[in-house]
Image (cartoon, rainbow, N blue to C red):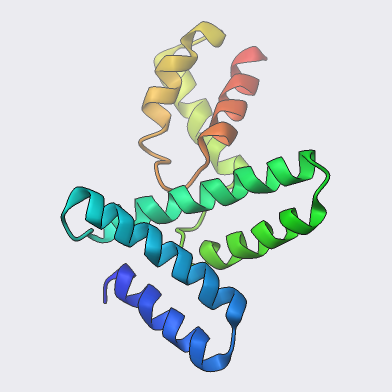
Amino acid sequence: MTLKQRLKEDMAAAMRQGETERRNTLRLLLAAIQQVEVDERQELDDAATMAVLQKQAKQRRESVADAQKAGRPDLAHQEEKELAILANYLPQMASRDEIQRLAAAIISELGVADVKGMGQVMSRLMPQLKDRADGRVVNEVVRELLSK
């Protein structure tokens, strides 16, 4: 079963069970997937569908931060609930400790000693953490390790 089929079946199950929050979130996600398919004039495979899913999750994380800055806890709470639903379909995220271990190994392998070599470390590290870590968190970890 493809990811898109799973999303459609889960949306139908949410409709049957009366879970409006879950139904609406999955409906928005499927609409975003369909929009990409229309724009690219091809059906998306699982990898491309996952990319759309990750983009939607990232938008929700940014919206939470924006709503909190604006003093709108109601909007932040709504976006957090949607993000929690989307998180069920995302791959397991790497822990900060795992990111630090991988980054430290690459730093020692490359012999980078200061923040000037951050680009080299990031270019080697990000492909390993592609779907499992937020780039902002990876950037923070690498910066911390290189500034010590």
